Image (cartoon, rainbow, N blue to C red; front, side):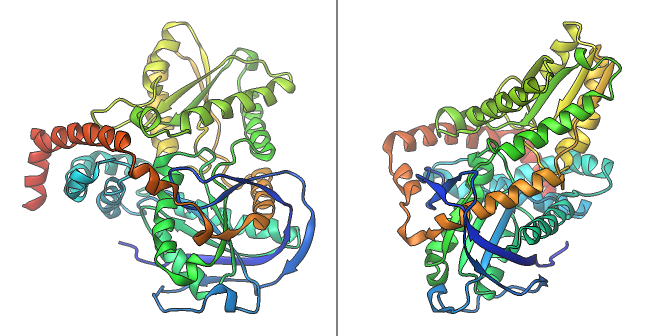
Length: 447
């Protein structure tokens, strides 16, 4: 197991560009902002450039207000992934131990870790096969580090000073480690940038909940001005970057005009949207509309569709499902398909194994003859430049978390929401605990 700490990349940033404040959602106690496009330089702060790699500690540091020199930080948040096959099972445990992944009511929260252990043991063999097929581990950390360095260079090109930190939710470098480094560096203003274009409870919301808990319990962090870019799929730079990739890949087909553009997004359980109010589905559909509008403005009028991949467990997920739609398209006579992993900005197992291998094979078996796939954005220059602009635009909205409304607590105290969670959580808990396969997996894990 790789227990190395996170590295933080420092560069230079100017404070500029106002952003419009947005009311905090019920997934986080933090304030957030919706960045606007125009930049107005109003000041400059400098920190020394460099790359940090260290072991984090909980040493107390003085509050930001006592630090004379202004230091700007950017915290990039991502999922994380196992770097070796030995990391797969503990990574899965961390994933399913997250209450935003398996949402149990308070009455059943004592089952969270036992369920996570059972599910991780049960799923580990198949997951190891998937990671083995793409080289033995996830490339997500490597790509995210590359994105951090590319963002550093983009900000330097704009004459901006900022220290960049990477925090992963379920594997190293963990978000908690990155926050401790932020404290050690005595950052005085922070922009939180989740690397998820669309907001979901299970991605951005989960990471913000971790930050919320840490910031509320720490005097330094609770007084640290911060701005959160909750979603950014609607930014012009992102939309155009996606359209650029799609336009380029269409040219690889002998008849580009006949290609179906197939957007495949990572799914979430339907209950997240219908009972918990997750905006993910709405934002995803809006995202597809914006990308297709950009393509049509370029004279690209291909047919398109949206489906959701990566569902697990006995509950219903967002539909339509990617695998089912691929079969239906083949039956309808679609011959050329371009897959677009729209919810991913980095290559990882869902793109390299699930789409490139499983779904490609299914599509060809279903009668689709010509298959293509748009690469993830990774370090595409226009994408990174737009992230840099988003950071600059967000900075003026930074305010201490202590002044933010803790909307998540209000949601937890809603008796209707609580009863809904109790009902669905109880069903899920009993299904998982009483499943013969789960009991067998648990017994095997103890041997």
